[in-house]
Image (tube, rainbow, N blue to C red; front, side):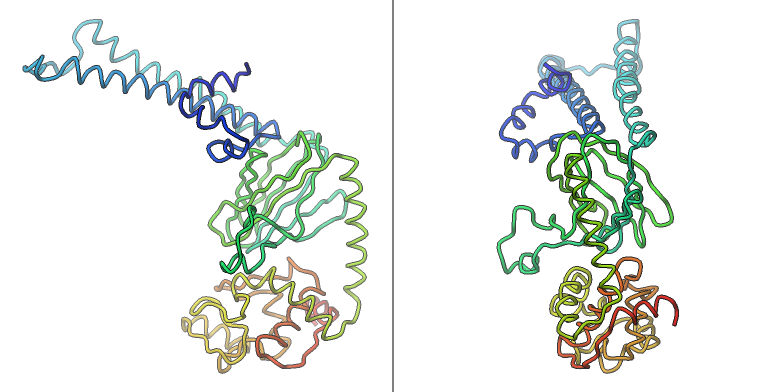
Length: 399
């Protein structure tokens, strides 16, 4: 029997609860580990659990014995001592204290300290992936392969709104997942563009905060291919992501396909599109990047997120309304029918002091152009404006 199974057996009833199907084990326990760090984390968890259960049984048993053996009917006169007297009482006082210190600093402390050091040891990594969190999506970059893309939640809006049955992977599906090879040490560089996020994949045994202004490092070495879902574990919003691991040869084929797709997308950045083409692409982009705040209906949330739909008044704080007016986007409640250059500026750079994030670093020119075109020609807005990727590119350059 392995060390982990021996320790788990000491947990008694809890071990029995975790002994059903794989899904039952995940419900009551950790997911099956697929990286060295995850194995170590699970071992420490089982070790802690075994020791806690053992101490609980011993202390609870001693308590019950004391209640029965020293009940008032047998010993009506309470003891009067206030400190240990004699070697036996001193031993009963000091030995449990020393045992707890030993458990805390040696049995539990040493493996926990080792795991913390191991999580940060990214030396001898064979490849690196930069993961950047933003409200509310993850961006993945592969410096060694020249690949970079954004991954957004793809759960249908009907499921989110409760108008359709929820899938078993509700809020855990994305449009462009992270893909990693197996049997290769991969360094993960984690950052944030706005607020604190937390990149968490239970099967990998990692949960690393993404803090604005800092780079955090950890690593994975995936043992077997599969789909390993994770998400942001910080109260940052509704950003989620999941990861896919593939064997090395298949990963290389994925890289080749991704490079071809990026080349085609780069070519599209210099193209010219019709209103219908931009609206179709913009509708998808709006659902993935904007609907979380402005809602799928475009009505926004009163006092927090302005409506995209034309003719809907927006009541908010004086400071927020002043910022919107300064950008030229607040007139009779119609947020997106102001000057096109102001609309582009807001999407590219956001609005400081509000929840409006800067999408310039997150999305490409064609996607931003399509979203702005869609917003200005949907939700009751009929401007007829057609924004091309070249206009976004020029705005980025400050022209």
